[in-house]
Image (cartoon, rainbow, N blue to C red; front, side):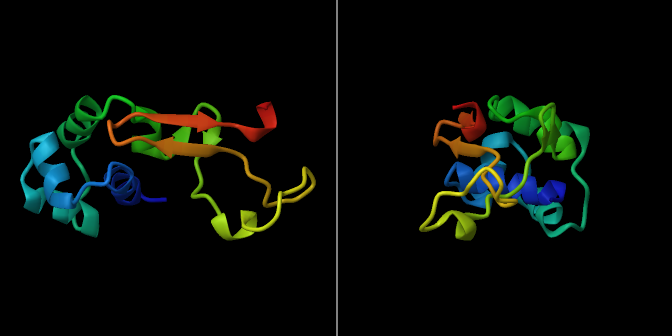
Length: 113
């Protein structure tokens, strides 16, 4: 997952439009558009504004796509619909992330339950 995809995920998780997201973090809408399209890479200042505005976002994940536990992958919802994955299932759910409208999130690890 590219950095612009992680930024899009933050926007979606907070039920915001790109315009409101840009306004919330204090950048020009055109700057966000250029980052989301892949034309420009986000600057350190840009990333810092995201992290200051959304303190629940993991800085390591935002920058690299990796946390201490490992790579965060997009959930494969289709594989979980209608059946409970087994432990031997290679598509077993590793982690579930729940994003709240206030910018916070929770991470659940089914294997730890």
